[in-house]
Image (cartoon, rainbow, N blue to C red):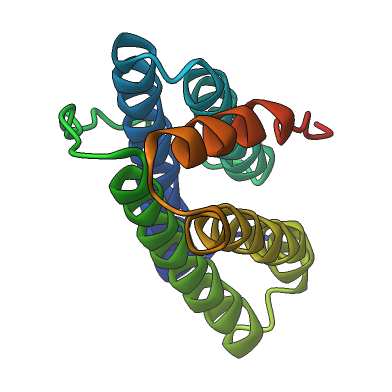
Amino acid sequence: MRLSAKMKKGLNDQIVLEASASSSYLAMASWCEITGYQGGAAYFYAQSDEERMHMLKIVHYINSMGVPAVIPAVKAPSSSYKSLEGMLKAALKSEQAVTRAIHALVEIAQKEKDHSTAVFLEWFVNEQVQEETKFEAILQKFDLLGRDKLAINEIDKTLAGSIQQEPA
């Protein structure tokens, strides 16, 4: 099975999205670390690694199909944030954009009857449900606990406790 030109472009574009997400999360981790949010720093360093692993999954898949993956340069992410809550909202928006892109790839695979790629993408579809749910749950904490310094400290601790290792 060969990848169509449209699927090759879509998968390579997804590599860019995953690399950009990894870079953004790294910048968020750095901001958290400097700002004193140790839980947030640990959480976003782990998120950055996870997005890089997503990128590598796609690189390996494209290469396994006999097509060289295109490794992108990514533009510098934002590195200044006003609040932990604002950063988490930005992260959720990023995950929602990735979800839309994955769904578009699934639609291409279905339309082209590219069953191999459709099966490969199924993992990403499930992963995105988990990612969005995770960020939504963390953002709910601001409404539940509040936005004062003690509440934000508790949310920072929650971030540290919610780091998950993803199976390769």
